[in-house]
Amino acid sequence: MKKLIPVLQSAGKNFFRKIYITIHLYRENGLANHAAAGAYGFLLSMAPMLLLLAFFIFYIFRPSPESITVLIGTIPFLNNIFDESWLFSDIFILTKPGIPGIISAVTIIWSGRILALSIQRGLRIAFPARRRRSPVKDTLVSLAIEASVIILVFIAIISSRTAVRLYDFFNFLPDISIIKFFTSHFGVHISSITLLGIASYFVYIFVPVKPPLKLSAFQSALLCSTAYFCTAFILGFIINRARISFLYGAFGNLIIILINVYFFFFFFFFGAQYAFVNDHYEALLFSRLRILKKSLEKDIPQGLSGKFNFTDFLYRLFHPSGNRLNKYFKNFKKGEIIFLHKNSKSLSGDVYYLLDGEAEITISSVHGGDKYSNILKPDAFFGGMGYHVSEHEIAVVMAASDASIIIIPPSLFKAIIKYDSYLDRTLIKDLAGRHKVPFK
Image 1 (cartoon, rainbow, N blue to C red):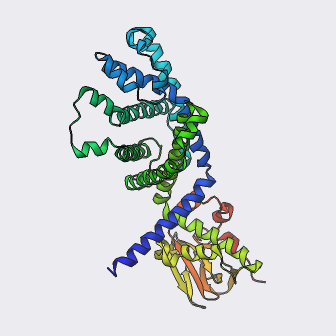
Image 2 (image 1 turned 60 degrees about the vertical axis):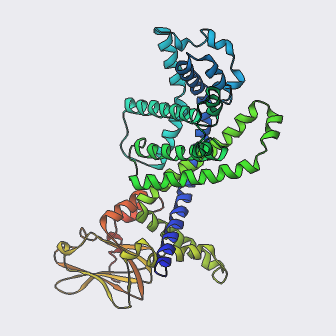
């Protein structure tokens, strides 16, 4: 048990760091606006989807008009506009064969793409990719999303409490406790959340051009469904359905559904951003460390160092000595050589980041005599100097004081440059050139 506690503490801290980074990226990328767009797209796509659902129900249960009356009579919104005369009329042109039916079906399906497009746009932000899909593939993905949503809603209707009346009508619902649970209000809620979690997982995997790893997608879908379940549970206590129905009539249910839909898309895109953070954790962890360090340096001159400082708390939490960056972290004593390269062939591609302390960089000739020297302050990058050191030069970096260094391998450094919007890329492109300051 004692060995398990440190593991749980470490896992908890890592989860908190990922959530913190996710919140910042979520806000910077404006994904809350995309969540609102998703809810708006759902509203505009609802009418076409309900028409298609009604058509499917009519088609499946057409031999039994009584079952259609029972089933549609319990579906929100359809029950308000449902008329039993539909069963004996040709109001649904979709039931007619030929060109008119095909045109009507295509029109309804095409008008329902708004929701799919909202999801695609949000996921492009959460999972950035250089390459783009062709317009044809984009359209096919949109139609696949729409079809999946319709099927998902249809399954939810058939398997929910809405169907209980239908089962009772035909008297074939077995008297089994597990079935009673899944047809209860709580069971339906659990089933719906599980279904949404599974759907979110497949959307994370198949919709983005550059999808996350499957494990990250699973964790994000679990996070999304759990957060939404808790939020929906709380909303159930906060929202007074009877009052809203009294004030807004038939639109009361629409308002409640839209509130729930918005929060679902809020957590859906949050989960997508979390998956991205999980896949690029080390690069984003380093970037956030730099940002927190700069924020802390601004707080100290203002006299905040003696008080509780949340930025200082976060900086200590993100310090590489206690997270995934620890394998790249190293301390050096004053006068200790950080690295020594005799010529360009001996240089590695590692980039060094000075977290704390000072370092002195010197480039000298193998024949004797110093050529260049400079004192590096915290937040400086150095290393990767192969293009600046000739075969007859020696590059030495020595700790001018006790110093903490993060040694970044090339692959990680490329990811940092790619995802760190706060990094001065012009400075990074010329890491060694800026240190070539002649002796005075």
